[in-house]
Image (cartoon, rainbow over all chains, first blue to last red; front, side, top):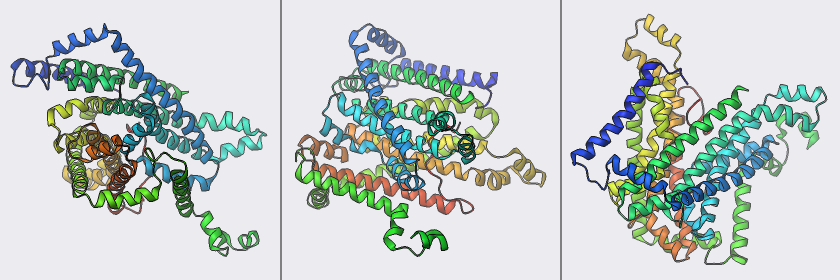
Length: 250
Length: 280
C-alpha cells in the first residue's frame, strides 16, 4: 500500500465526517423515514443501552464462539487436506480445480440443508461457517506448499536434512505468509457466514438480534447492532493485517 | 509399462485405462462418480428419508416437482434475472468508480482505503435493512447482489490501473499519444487480467448476495420454496432445487470465464481464482 500523505489522510477523515454529517442532516430534515434511517443520537443511545444488558454480551459471545469453532474445524481440515494434496503433482492437478470450482458456487445455497441436518441451533452455523472457510484455507495451503522453490528443497536434502527438518526449516517458513493470508480470509468468511446464518435462521447471536430488531420495527436498535458489527469487523481486520505484516516482514 | 515409458516419453503406448488414471480430468470425473455412488448407497440403505435422499431420488424429484411446477420454474427464472441485473449494475458502476479512483495517484491514495474498509465490512449485517428499504420483492435481491458484487470489481480495476508501468505511459506520450490514446492503448490492455479477476470475484459475490437475500426472506422466490421443502422435511426436491441453483451459478461463472479467455490479449488462459481480495 502507498504511503498515506497528509492530504490523502484528510480526504478519508473528510469522508467520515461527510457520512456522519449527511446522516445527521438527512434525519434532522425529516425527509427520510425514521424507519430506514434513525437519528444518530437515537442509535448511540440504543448502543449504550445495549452495552448495559447482559443479553448483548451473551449474543456477541455466541457469535464469536460459533465463528471460532467453525474456523478451527476449517483450519484443521483445510490445512491437512491442502497439505496432503500437495504431496503429489497429480493430486494437485486433480483436486485443486475441484476445490476452486466449488468455491465459486455460493455455499449459501446449501444453507437450508445445514438447517435440516444440524437444526436451528449453533451447530448448523458452525458447520456452515466451517464449510465456507475450508475452501480459502485449503486453496491457500495448496498454493503455499506447491509454489515452493525446488532448489531450496534439493539444497536442504543434499545437506542431509531429514524429512522433518525440511518441513520445519524449509517448507513451513516459506509457506507461512501465503498460508496466513488463507487463514485471515477464512476467518472473516467464517464470521460473515455465521452472521448471515444467524440472520437467516437461528435462535441466538448477533445476526439473530439484527433480524429481530428489524422484525420488531426498532430501527435504532438494529442500527446500533449494525454499528457494533461494523466497528468489530474493522478492528478485527486491522488486527489481522498488522499480524500478517509482522509474519511477512520476518 | 516402465519399458515403454523409457523408450517413449509420456507413456503414449500404455493402455487407455492407465492413461486415464494419469489424467487429472478423468481422475476428477472418477472422484465425483465415487462420491455420487457413496451418496446413493448411503441414501438408499442407511439415511433417514426425512433428512436425506439418494441422488437417484433427487433426480426423480427434479422432474416430478421442479420441472413440472411452473411456479418454481418462474421463481428460478426470476432468480436468474436478479443475478443478471445485479451483476450488470455492479460491473457498470464498479468500472466507473474504479476508473475515477484509479485515475490519479492522489485519488487512489485518498479513496482506495475507504473502498477497502467498506469491502471488509460483513454486509450480511445490513441484510434486514436492505429488505426494509427495498421490500420483499426482487429489488432487494438485486440491491444486495449489487452491493456485494461491486467491491471486488472496484478493487481490481484500481489495482490493474496502479500496475501500469510509468515507463510505458511516458513512452507513449513522448511518441505523441494523447491522454485518450494512453487510456485506450496502454492502460486498458494492461488492466485486462486484473479486471477479469475482479469480474470473476464480482460474479461469485453477486451470486452470494442474491442467494443470501433470497434465503433470508422471499415471497414466492426460490428462497421461499427452499424454506417450504426444508420445513416439510422433504429433502429430495430441496436437493434438486439447490442443484438447479448451483448449475445456474456454474453457468454464470463459466460465462465470465469464457469472456475472459476470449478478451484477454495474448494467449493467456484464465488464471486460477485469486484469493487475496486487496491485491497487497
